[in-house]
Structures are given as structure tokens and as C-alpha cells.
Image (cartoon, rainbow, N blue to C red; front, side):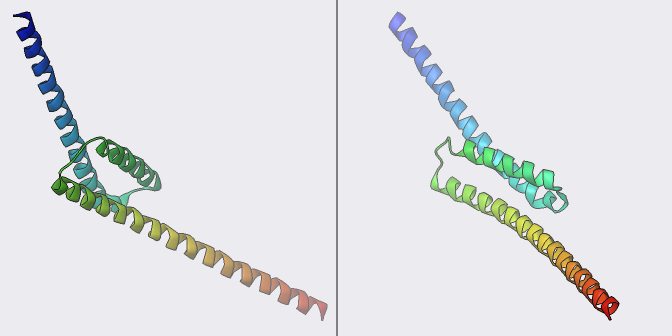
Length: 127
């Protein structure tokens, strides 16, 4: 009788463990889905801090996903969402790079103009 009770308790515990793991697996997948939708539809208005936070959150979600086994179909879906997020991060990075290059270009242009003016003024004063 005691052995049967022990076996029953063990089976219940194992069942609860498996359900718990499945819940966490599904939860991690849902978190990636939610994150992907959020970044897809709201990132146009993100500040740099929000982009930084999004990148950190994305890394945490990806680490959590790595803790579970998924079917090929689920892995394909995960890959698709990761691809969408990565493309959005890349687009933001390229946009920032363009802004930085424009700023540098304008500063160099101003520097050259200021330098040239000063050299020409010096030449006029020497005459």
C-alpha cells in the first residue's frame, strides 16, 4: 500500500513538473511574440534608451527560449520572429549611423569653411 502511494505521488509530481516545463516553454514563446509585436508597431517612436532596453529584453527572451526544446515548426516560427526583431534593430542602427555621418559631414564642412575663411583673411591682412 505504501509503495503504491509513493508511486502515485511520484507520478503526480512528474506530471506537475512536465506541465510546469510546458507552461514555461509556452510562456517564453508568447513573450517573444508579444515583444515582436510591440517593437514592430511602437519602435518608430523609441528613444535611444528604449532601444537599449529593447535590445536587453530581446537578449533575455532569447536566452530563456534556449532553455527549452521546440518542434521544427515552433523553431521556424521563433526564427521568423527573431529575424523580424533583428531587422528592426538593424534598421535603427543604420538610421543612427546615417544621422551620425550627416552630423560629422556638416561639422567637417563647417570646419573647412571656417579654416578657409581664416586663412583667406590672414592672406588679405598680409597684403
